[in-house]
Length: 130
Image (cartoon, rainbow, N blue to C red):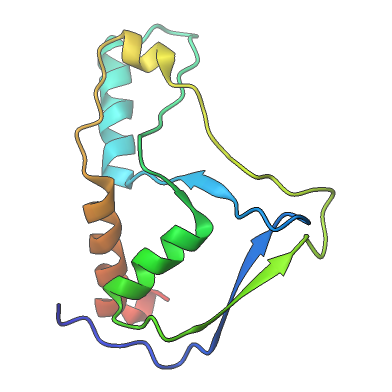
């Protein structure tokens, strides 16, 4: 891996619930979302609602570890921040039910971990977009 080491970041904060639970999210590459939209344009029913999601679910700490590994920069000062400083609560998990699109036959064929690595490397190589 020839991705340069990130040296300008010193502290990383991961927000948790007031009891220390780290949030979980589903991450999906934009190409997979586009494929699903094209699929729905061809096979979906007008007026029906469809959720598009995938199987890559990571907690925020695991996502950070994956990013650090890809950037060769795991010597960061990671701090867990309990409770939100603002807002009315902490959302432990964001997820959707994708039964409607799967019932039409849509299958997500992307390796989203690989796509996440590609995205990280794209940003490293295209700093003008940051």
